[in-house]
Length: 373
Image (tube, rainbow, N blue to C red; front, side, top):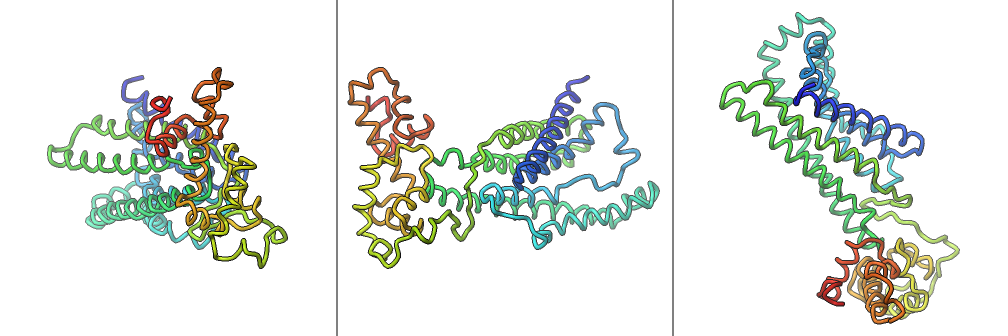
């Protein structure tokens, strides 16, 4: 064992372990997002495989499998994009029409496998040819283009999703998937680091083999972060986001038809919304959603969301948390709660985490909870 091989071996086998666990869970629970994240973990394992075995003195991948298309750079970014789509919408299904996103990877695989099956001599001759040189440049451009396009689309989709979540859920922390956004940022930072390293390699002459270890160590850190966060994250059952808003609607028989409630005059909604929140205290439910309230009022989420925005100038998340903050302020003045901690009172009032409570309290009072006390 050496300082070089131990971390890479740990990251390599950890990535494979998470890949297997995610694929098994995805198959058992029929969850596409787990299957796709399992593929991402497998791709990360393949990223460090050659160096993991190389630092261990096992050179089979260079000796017997040189030229075999065992890298997945051109499939990596599209898979992350589809993982995000399937994670924020449990109804999303991967279809044959989506396969074109993997066209560049298919071309890379076919070119390399055709050369590889002809034997080591052909592989060696191809590697030293001018065609291979230019194909290598095209592959690098394609990889960067794929990363730029799909990471941009992923971050754009994530931003739109976060805006939607604020209008649908009173508790957004468990469905925010901030770790996934951070993962994309880490990959971008890693690729910039790798690009800078390659520039230094060319400027300073070929750096020693061991210098590439730092880049692969960074990949091990990504494997640990993504594996732990991705496998342990909360999996909401009813999350269903698309650009055309998809939410659970009340049954047709429950919707009040041809009534003033369904009319575009949203001002008539205000007393009805206030009544259901004041009398039924729905805000005390930590997982309260817009569809829950819509079902209570026997209408649809689009009308209710518009009514809240127009009458209270808040999205659904802020509207509910405002009620919760007001309830916390009332309970703090109640001597019967002297035995409870501030966080305990917040949890009793519908908040489900300290960070969400602190953020909402500061937003609506201008003070931190400690300053208010």
